[in-house]
Image (cartoon, rainbow, N blue to C red; front, side, top):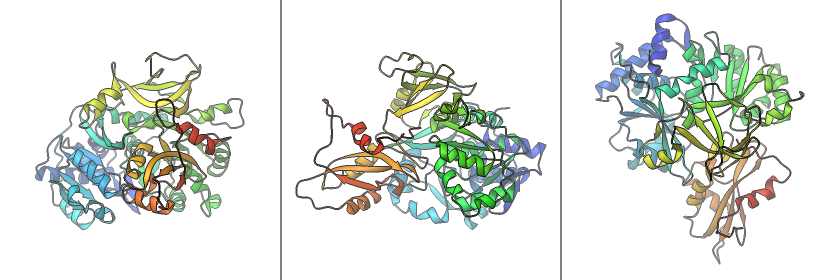
Length: 511
């Protein structure tokens, strides 16, 4: 049977109908109940005239209805579009215009982000709550029986490009089918309880969030990450698995009462976006008492493609240096490290660009054939844009980002996007944005600004100006004024030189 999100719930509604599938804020749905709800959504969408290939967008913090929609869309071949509620309204409007969804389902607290007329072209808007429930529950519970093909697109998740323009990553049924294999690699089973606190518009949310479900296990979804609530949920629900960025693990360790909480059910905590520091890992192992594994992947790979397993997390062992690695490629993933200039494989130990080939790789970027051709080259290899070296055992050590991306608390921030937004200010002559160390978030954006002659604008005014154009987490948390930006002979700003002042004597978390 073709793997689809719809077939996950169909399969376990038949085999284990009364098993818990999804828990959210005290309410638990069985696989049978989730199957019925998603079938009602599928039929309600059909009644609106939606057919295979049409898009349905969701703009909301985590909610169980996200799964109703993901699986309901799958049951008629529609494509679910995840919208990042952390973005500003103009940014969301650009994505909506590109995806052109026939329907947008929005949370009540996120409704204001669609206030602009530009954000609602030819789309029906339905708000979660009484309106959505009535719309869904008025439809038939009969399964529409659509299955679809392996190469059909099922999810459209947006990621920012280096130019600041968003790109819709097309994820197929085939690509998402590997979530079950990843679940098995993480030793999940039908007896597992997986806590999902990452946002469901993100591959780290919806991708990771279906890993246990694809094996018939129980998924506990949180509206958003809250360290105290996460600790409480682990004890309350007997959570066995979860995924966090290291900054979130650090926040949980600082939560009141964490050392007195019953965390004995935990088996494995996965982390990604950056390596985990030695001191943080030691404390986490001591407090949580479970195994840890690092995950490296991206939206374009439908999730994790490289992993550092639990047995390699030994800060006192003779292979402790592996903690600086993100691990090795999974068996179903081919990985090369390529010289980006010659396109030849580099020798072991030399830095090059990571290329990935796997059934997990995206079908391409929505409405962007040129970007697709640049990213996916002959033979189906995905150029990740990440620089790394590989040792003689196949372990990958991320070295830097070719694209100067900043990773702050697990969120990817592209300096060019911030620079473009700030350049609109009339008092700015030149600007360069870099990542600087931050104890809480790993790194945070800093803007180095050359002002126009005679300008008296303040740092705070520039921050506030940027926040009107971009999501707050993308905006610089500090600004430094300078007379000139360092450049090479071709005129390119030397960001490495700018960063060196702040990272001297420190290791920058670059993956």
